[in-house]
Image (cartoon, rainbow, N blue to C red; front, side, top):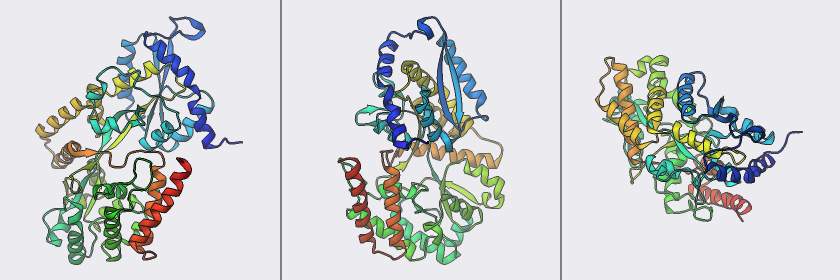
Amino acid sequence: MELSRRRLLRLLGSGGAAAGAALAIGACGRHPGPGGQGGAERSLSVWTLDLAPRFNGYMQSVIASWEARNPGVRVRWTDVPWASVERKLLAAVFARTAPDLVNLNPPFAANLASRGGLLDLAPVLPAGAAATYLPPTWEAGRQNGEQFALPWYLTARITMANQALLERAGVAAPPRRWDQLPAYAEAVHRRTGRYALFMTVVPDDSAELLETLVQQGVQLLDGDRRAAFDSEAGRQAFAFWSGLYRRGLLPREVVSQGYRRAIELFQSGDLAQVATGPDFLRNLQTNAPGIAARTVPYAPITGATGDANVAVMNLVVPRQSTMAAEAVSFALHLSDATNQLAFAEQARVLPSAVAALEQLQRQLGTSQPADQAERLVQRARLLSAQALEASRVLVPAIPGIKRLQAIVYTQLQRAMLGELGSDRALAEAALQWNRYAEARWP
C-alpha cells in the first residue's frame, strides 16, 4: 500500500541524530568508513535535475576535480527528471537511501525544510560563505533563521517584443512599469487587432502574475503567515488585472490556458510581447524564423521600485545524510565562481556567485559574434544578467505558496469573468487563505 506524502515527509526528518553525529565528526575532516575502517572509500550521493546527457562532461569534470582534493570519497552522481524528483526523493527517504546532496526547486525544498527534512547548513559552512553569492539568492535559502539551501544557477526573465507589431501600434518600445500597461495594451489591440501580452491565471501554472502583484506593491502575507494582500494595494491590483480582461485587452484564454499558450501566440504573431529567458530566441529562430527576425529583447517590466524577479535553483542536504560536511563541500565546489561561470556559458543560465556574474557581464558586453542571430541572443543574455542587479525573489518559496497561488488565481478568475466584483473576490481569497493558514499554523 502506498504511503501518504505526509508520512514520507515525516520520515525525511528521521535522520536527525545521524546528521548531528556527522556534523561533529565532519569538523575533524574524516568519517569512519564501512565496518569502522577509517581508510575505506566512501560514496557521496548527489542528485541533479535534467542535466544528463547534455552536461555529462561538465559534471564529470567538476566531480573529478573535487575528488582529487578529497581522496577516499567518490561522488555517485544521479540525474533525475524534473517531473519525478519529488516522488523519487520521498521513495528514497522511505527506503533509507536518501542522497547526501540534492538539486531542488525552491518550493519543494522550502516545504521539506518546514517539516524538518533538510539540514541547517550554517554549522557546516565556512566563515564568509554568504558573501560569495548574490544576497537575494542567499536569502532565498533561509527559513526561520536556518540556512536550508545554497543557491546554484539562476534565470531572470526579460521582455521579448515583436517590433513589427509595436510599430503598427504606434509605440516605440514596451512599457517599463506596470502602470504604463493599460494604455499600451489598448494601443496594440485597437491598432493591430492583436494582444499586448498574456498573463495566465490558471492556478497550477506560472507564478508570474503573483510576482507582478508584489511588483505592484502588494504584501502577500504578514509575519504570522496570514493574508496581508486584502489591502488598498491588493484591491488596486485585482481591479487592474480584472479590468484589463473585462475590457478585452487580455486574451480570453488566460483563464483556461497556461504559459505555453503565450509562447504559441507570440510565435504565431498574435502577441506583441512575452516574458521569457534569452534562450527563447534560439527556439524562436528554429520554430518561427519570420517572427524571430522581428523580435527585439528589452528589459523586464517592473513596478515602482524597479525590482525584477529572479528564479533560483538550489542545493540542499537531506537530514538523513551522514556525510553532511562532504555534501556541503561538494555543493560549495559545484557553485563556486569558476564552475558556475563554466556552467552559465554552457547552459545559458545565470550564476549566483558574485564573481562569476561580474565576469559573465564583462564577456557579454565585449564579445562581438559575427552572426546577427547570435548577436541578438547575446544582447538578450546581457539584459538578463543586468536585470539581476535589481532582482530579488519576489515570491519567496514559503510552505503553502502553491496553495496561496491557487486561491488568489481562482478568485481573480471569478473577478475577470464577472462572477464577483474585484474587491469581493480579493476578500474571498483572503478568507480562504486564512482558513488554510490557521489550520496549518495555529
